[in-house]
Image 1 (tube, protein in one colour):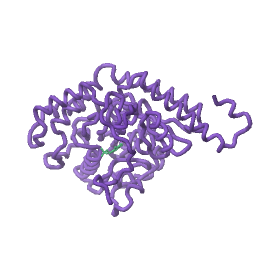
Image 2 (cartoon, helix red, strand yellow):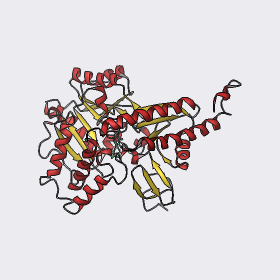
Image 3 (cartoon, protein in one colour):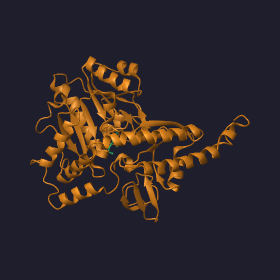
Image 4 (cartoon, protein in one colour):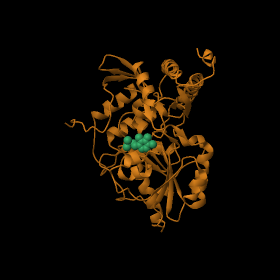
Length: 407
Ligand SMILES: *Cc1c(COP(=O)(O)O)cnc(C)c1O
């Protein structure tokens, strides 16, 4: 018999009754260090006092009034995002996928309005993830997720991530834009180099294409800057945000330059719930914290420290961790054994992490994690990596005496 909750997830048999900062308290009576952050969502940890207060206050005032009317807190939030990014204008959504749908619509409409309706195709990358709508599944091109949902939405061309020759070769007269995650999350914490991101900007300028970044996962402070692309010192024309933007309250945003979005006039796009007062209160409260002087510098500093610590563990136990990837508090452990074994073993030790493609385990601490809390997580990873490396040892053919090095 089918379960009442549609069984589209292979869930872990574990539930939580409350969260506080970096910790989740399970109904099993155990306390877990949450380095999933709800897949990069609870950027400020669980029940951050400033967020709780903002949402409670708003809950007693006004939940919803629709976009028929002005929403002053949404205007404030949009102005703050504009002030702190390349963008001139913002459309609010309830999720990442809606932010991507808006992005793709802007990419197409820009060229249509410029007298080039034939330029509708968007180049995306292998390993990308842009959401689960029909269009964003086509954009991501993941066969596993597309299966059973034919026909595939037309208008997307995939090239290998990080390969500029293939990117250039894929451009045709119908190409409207390039859409890329500066750091692929679901794809296995694969980061585009700053040279790659800069070259994408150059290619777009050279061919008259728009550049769109999907920062739904890499944005909102995770890498130690508000947006991951800032490390490359370039700007996209359009950008999708969600996940960390509400730190657990569902809210997304599509940010665009005036040039890219000049055709997005009244009636061209819409949403019932997007930008509602509750979501705006949550996201404004998140920005209060993230834009406070020193916050992002602190994430950068602790991120570097954490990365160094994980790099040390990976170096010591290559039989468990084949490679360390990522930036700041967006770290990925490419496993030697199946990544599910690592996730399970870490959870058994009280540390929650998320699997990703390419046999990677994502380690996404809340951005508020202290040095001590990061060390607590690192120590569990070290212990588990040591055990997994030991378990792998008999399988490996190694010269006599090589194991003497392992402590
Ligand atoms: C999670 C994610 C999405 C989809 O967001 P939803 O809120 O699940 O719709 C899109 N792009 C990236 C990069 C993501 O990580």
